[in-house]
Length: 103
Image (cartoon, rainbow, N blue to C red; front, side, top):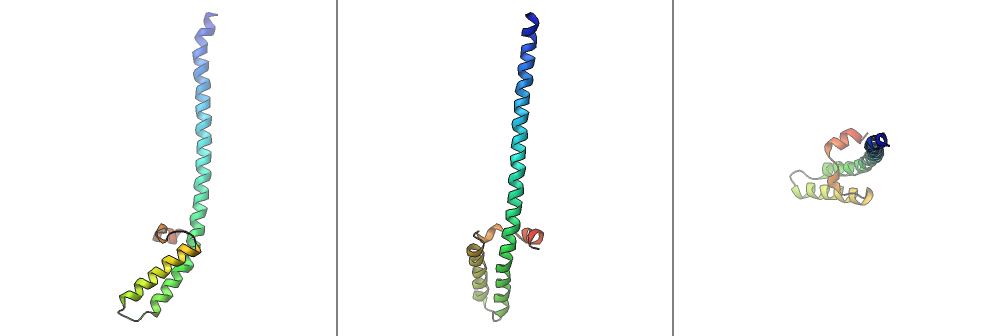
């Protein structure tokens, strides 16, 4: 009976450690799935907004030289296009995102 009391804390600690590791593993799997899903969402969003950036480039090329207001209007058109077509604010995409996912 004395040996059982000596082993009991060790068994409890081992069981607790197994529970914690399984929760950590589960949390890691969930985190990985979320990162994978968000990466795919970024790719799709950047592909969507690429067309809007093309609208901005065409708009700027049609602007007369020296008109600063025209450039601002084109940028506003790009922001509106991204917000409406891709359903995200324009400022979520960076140049790095476009280089990485835009193809």
